[in-house]
Length: 166
Image (cartoon, rainbow, N blue to C red; front, side, top):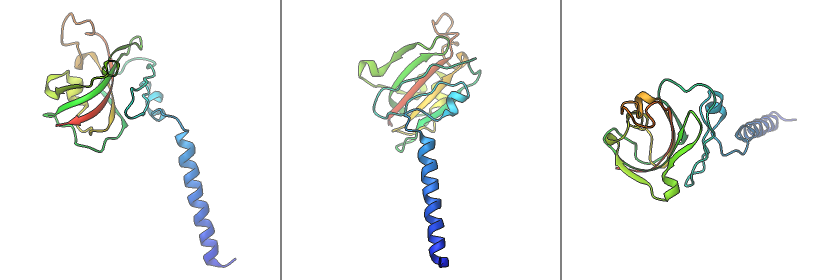
């Protein structure tokens, strides 16, 4: 076989192998890669434009803020001074129950980032419009600073879809 033909054959085989590896690693699932579930964090579906499904977490809650981009946005970047329009779902770590979701009412929420809990203020900057970010927020960055709040001792799990940044 001529050298040029042999090189072409190897190139085609290499491309096919890379494509096969890419497709099989995706597995056809709508879930975030195993990196979140392997670390004990909940997994979240990446079905853009639809309410996410959050798989309840396992094990002990993390003591620090955890963020995972489920869908990478391509729009405007969230800054500490931004006003956001989002859809969100809130789950409690302790029992895996959905506590609140803007998807249920069909209306997204709009607010200045500076006016919400510290976990959002620290966890959302850098995300971009069009993205979905998982936030796992320890009590000290959630409602633990509000004595008597029903969620003051709860680790909070938020799936946040960033619709608009201004």
